[in-house]
Length: 278
Image (cartoon, rainbow, N blue to C red; front, top):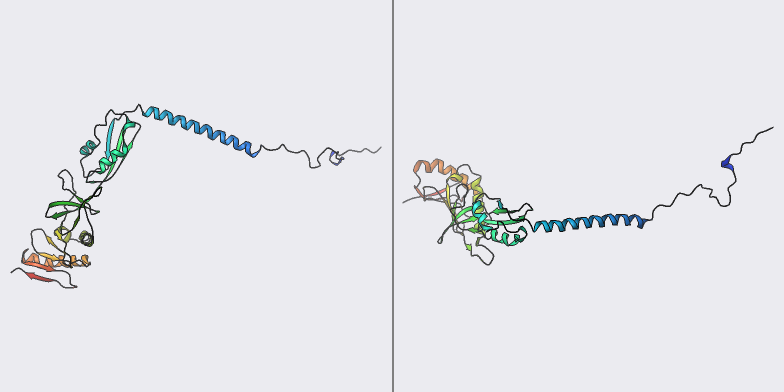
């Protein structure tokens, strides 16, 4: 007798069944997922707020242990520490960093300063010093000029590195409220150009001692031990002019003597005009 095997896959679908098979469970709604994220963020915010409150309470109990000054190379670190006043054993939170910063930048040789309070009881001051460029000689005496043209007083305790060239003839703009005295203008640009050319020479930079700036293309310099005026003018090409000076110095001055000439004009191309002393 034939046997029949019923295949469940081919059985008829009932009226309440889905022909596509069982329906998966629906995923969590979008807003429900965001609710979990927001809850986590709220918990983190509360934790950070608690830590901030605890740190503020702890900071009130921290006292100043030391004032540390960094960035010093020309000035005396002990003098700069004194600018901070007596902060030892004062509550760290009572230190006014902005007032302390203004106190430091009032020093003529400090260009900028920053003050921070550290939770270990250290008040840290970082200063940026002004870099002296030359000595300015005027009727009022000798002062310094920094690389930005700011006029500085000469101080014995300032450790100026190396030898600085003297300069005369630079007009000084007087100091104003919150502004130091400065030099600027075309003559200051001429001086910087001559100084830059001197740095690139082999011998002239070692010999030149003073630069005198004069309008009308009459700027000149003198060397150590001689009153001879070496005229370079105000119209540029200073490297070429200094090269001619070096040749003239080695071939003529070294043979005839330092004070054989009252002036040597280096302003002309491929030639030098020298005027002998009478």
